[in-house]
Length: 328
Image: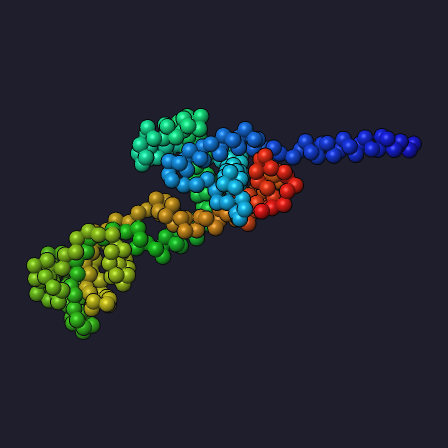
């Protein structure tokens, strides 16, 4: 049976209405929405923080108002949060109250608690609002590290650790400095089985280092990175009580006696190992995540770019402006 034209028109009209209703007030990530009330609250918080730190909220594009730029920057932050929130909940990475409070306390120490209170009150906010932002920041950091560790893998991190172990070591060393390889070889044969006291005594008579007659070549305990690379690598490779074969540096030839060393364990060094690799891994994960979840921004505020993970001003981003107006 043919459907009457009037019925077809009604179906199309209802479909169009449904499409209009499905558009988010501000933005949507998966099934989570940013409503206009959420945006107003987040903008108020960003403006309060900006005033405290002397920073503007957002960077206006040519012809764009500061308010519109602030909206875009804030929506970008909200999208970031909604992108990681579900993963954080599933993997129990949500920040503890104590961690959020520590972040807020650091801010208060920088600009004084009363200044923070006044700035928040001026925007109808409280310290609890700031604590919630702190929770988000700490949670995002935790997700970033967890994702990076998962994507990079323990094997690659351990290889990095072994190659960069000097950066995680503190050594207490003595040395004898000689001018030539031949002299260094001769001294090495004399001290290769020496005690520390015997090594220091010989350093006083043999080392060409200024002041060695008094110091006995004792360098004390220092981070290995304070020494030139060749010396540092040779010292870290030793175990306490061992003596190195002659090592050449820009200063001459060294024979090294290792008194003691401390090396940060691999598990404790992971965060530093991840730091230079985490951003790229995290951005790659974010791109995959938004592809899977889907991100939609109301055109009145701009257009979301996965490449920059930000809302860009392709149309008027002024909430009071015309959604169909051309981009600045």
